[in-house]
Length: 279
Ligand code: B12
Image (cartoon, rainbow, N blue to C red; front, side, top):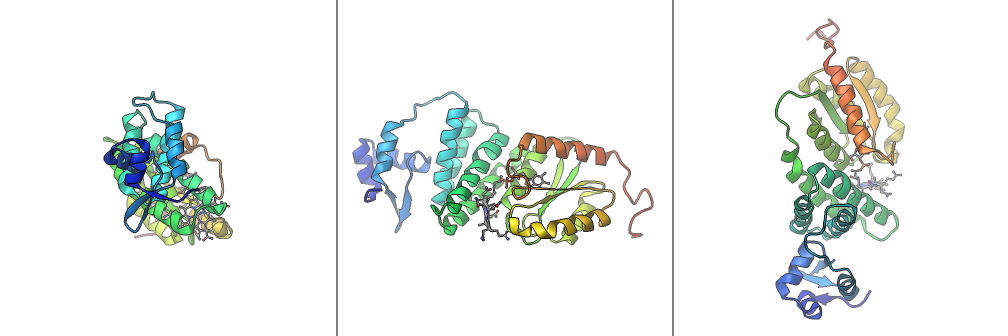
């Protein structure tokens, strides 16, 4: 890595206007980090940019997806929400669906950030910064998954007690909403009682999805599942997530939830069968 240079010097070296270089940074095309309020650039990245220019109007396909993913990862690590959203918009503009943005851009960018953290290449602060921006991107995309009409079934999602990961349930929730399910996302670190309360609120029978991303919480999972299955005997309780299934097939996961939730919806609730708590 060479000595970092400022944005104006980078623009000069590229032979482009300052604002053009700024746009390259905000769109993730040119990696940069903020130092004392100024964008600083590694000269090696200028060389890479020259070697791999991005022609306008590239066709939709695997290669541009990879480019968008790499750009997004760079903007997430820089904590650049505006630039990150710019990459998302560029991907949507080139034909990616919101589900593809979640499943093929944001998810894989996070996975790569995690791998780079595990390899000692990124700090935990980089990961936290990127996660915070990723949450905001997911929130901005959320309304695009709203579907009018009758729901195909109901789902409660949450991470196991002690598991601090909330992004996996946020992403999965929207994919399930997009598939026509009503979803309550409880986020990180959910005690058993919260799953039960949420099931009562969304309406039973429903599917309870327990997300396990942190391997250290795996020991509490069997007991949690037993408890939930006891308390929510009219619901389907399943577990998944990176610590259980690291090579998850997202389409198959969504199909599984849809099948289980549709089947549950067709069943009478425990209250109708006289099995409720008596309340
Ligand atoms: C962001 C992140 C964090 C953030 C979380 C921020 C947040 N608000 O979510 C912070 C910094 C807090 C964090 C903490 C930790 N993390 Co972390 N984290 C990540 C990272 C980079 C991204 C996670 C993510 O959102 N992935 C993207 C989603 C889309 O992918 P996904 O998890 O596979 O989820 C999909 C599917 O699994 C499925 N799914 C999810 N839930 C369910 C449920 C059911 C029922 C089903 C069927 C499917 C399903 O749908 C999801 C949507 O696509 C990952 C890297 C990675 N590989 O994922 C590491 C990673 C998960 N973390 C890891 C670790 C080790 C930790 C810590 C233990 C680190 C530490 N020592 O402190 C702590 C955990 C502490 C705790 N008790 O929870 C490791 C886990 C290693 C392992 N599996 O063996 C990873 C893989 C990093 C790595 N490469 O080593 N982390």
